[in-house]
Image (cartoon, rainbow, N blue to C red; front, top):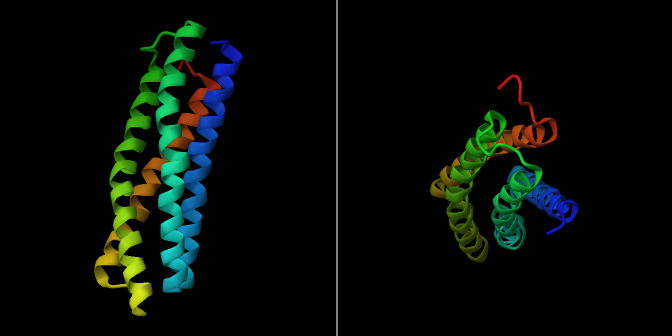
Length: 157
């Protein structure tokens, strides 16, 4: 595959991954801040859909195109900046996998509460807090990965 096309796919998929993550996080935060159970249920439903349509494919494309780019560019796959990148990507993934299951449960709990016309229960809020806090290390890790991909620091690591 042409190097520039591969690089474009890698950059676009990283942007989709990051953008979907921050976009869905903002929508969840805003809906919960407003407190409307029907809006929260709708946002939860849409966040689950967005993760399946955008985040999941990007999560798969990123390491594949990254590996092909490393080979095509002749980088040492064990260079320290790449090792840090792999570890941060794994950290983001380790946070994202439980988030996927939490989002499914949040979606279901919010849908039931909205349908029954009742407030969200304590279990919902515990799951939401876990979802919220798992997002921070994933977000921070991906910000650093973006920087590593641009800077490719080989001397200081």
